[in-house]
Every structure is written in structure tokens, then in C-alpha cells.
Image (cartoon, rainbow, N blue to C red; front, side, top):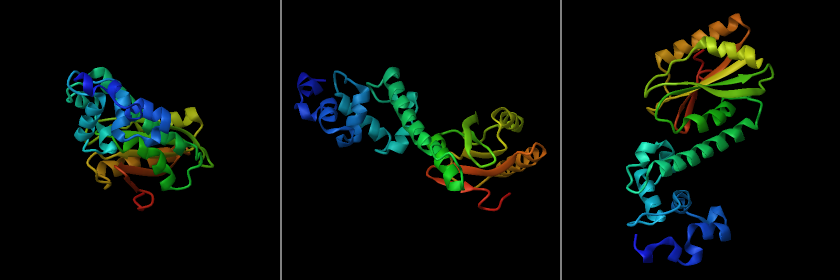
Length: 229
């Protein structure tokens, strides 16, 4: 990066960090926010140039950026492991913030409420992940956790572990959810069989399965709403 292109030589209010101090984070572009995370450029490119390259890799879509892993980010010359980890950590914090906003609702009254919590955890993932919400009799949320993860098309779920955790958390109702990286919300036969298995096993322990949600990007399907079980 030439000395004249160095961020430190830009007009002060055009430098991402100074601009954020003066005008607030909302005034910055996606590339400028990303440049702050990158911190410094290379001999050929500024941090802002690298940020633009990363956004181009993600098709200028923050959702796609959230799906990139460290190795994929390292395809950009100038983005090493440390910078890739920093970016992935920031994206994960964003997901967790979304989830915490959902958790503040506490009582799950509908599939929409459940989807509001599951989506931040599952919508950006390239592999299947299975989540469980543990609720009390009043549908007050006691705990939400990722139980297992798998490959691109399937994950293994231990029904016994879910029921064991119900006893541990003193929960008598559960909502389960998993994502479909394919983008389709249509439940597979394996999805249905798992739902029936957990429903039937739960009845023996007075644990009610309220719903099973399938998340595909920003869309979801509720098996309960669809009358599948």
C-alpha cells in the first residue's frame, strides 16, 4: 500500500475510526465497519480496500458474510487467520445479540416467538444444527441450547439426552428446531420420525413436545402449525 493511500493520511473525518467517534457507528458503511475490524492494510491495499474485497466475496450481503468461515475469508490476500477469526467472532456476537433479544420475551406463545429465537442461531449455518428450548408449564423459557450438529444434510439427535436435560432443568415442555442448509423448509421423513419419537418418548415422562421448527434462511416451517403431529 502506497504511503499516500494509507488510512492515516486520509482526511480525518473520512477515516473509519475517527468517523465513528464523531458521527456514531450508524454513519459508517458496511465496508468501513469491517475495516475497523481488519485494523490495518497491506503494502498493496488499505484496510478499507480489504473490507470491500471481503464484501465482494460475500456478494455484498451481510447474511452471506455471516456464513463464511475463517478458511474462506483467508482466500482474500491480506486476510490471515487472526483477521479471519476476528471477523467471524464479530459475526457470532451479532447472532448472539439477536438471540438475546428473543430470550427477553421469556414466554413462548407461538411458533413465531420460537422462530425469533431459533433463527439467529441457525439461519446462517452451512451445516445442520439441532436446538432445543426447555420450557416450564407456563411456557416460560428456561433454557435454549444447541444439542448437536452434523453435515450438510443431516444431524444426529439423542432423544434420551433431551429428556435427561428436561429433568435437569425442571422442564416439562420442549420446542425443538433445526436448520436446512439447502434452503427448503420441507420436512424430510427423518425429520418427521424424530418428531414422533420425541413426542412419544416425552409422553412417558410427562414432557410435552410443543413444536418442531425447520429454519431455512429467513423462512421457517412449524410442524405443529402444519398439523404434522
